Length: 256
Image (cartoon, rainbow, N blue to C red; front, side, top):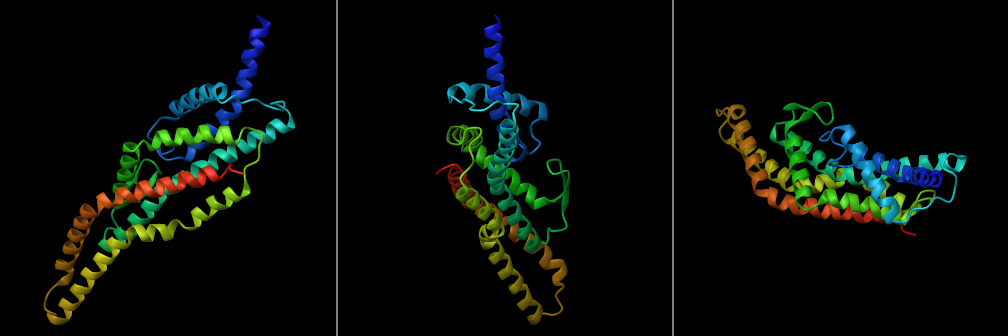
């Protein structure tokens, strides 16, 4: 009986390290870290995944869990989970930044709603893009790809092993390219709205008696929503491509 308890205790200590990485990942990653699920459900899911992945991946510790090496490894598990979660969270932030640029061009920059995810005021158009991106990723199995990413990270980067620094540099470069990629996503919308504003500028010169403040604002907003409706099918393809690119960069994080 004592030997069985020791085996169970050893398994719990071994599963502690994957649990810390998975729970840290869930804090930031899309779907899981956006407030849609209560924290106790996320903790339960992290415990289940840690319990399933630890024996299936053959995770073994080469150090004592409560030694100095064990505490150092726990700190690295937190850092690895947060870094991987941030890498995938940038996919969502790209489209939120693009939505803010488009909202300013449409005149919706002042339209704010209380966002339960971020706990503050968020532009209305950003919420529309956020839910659209989440639905696209869920439809393509993006949440399952995140779980598979966690399993691959535990296989390629077991507890106590340092990550590859070249992969870390790639993840940092993704954060630097966030606004550049967001502008590329928003470029068709912005170009169409700029052309509309130029047309109203020509009209104001040709017919100064027209009140363009009462005519132009609703027309630009209507044109903006029409362009959103036309470009959303193309936006779904961009979501898939950017998500796949970020998954490949996250894998480089532990490749040697």
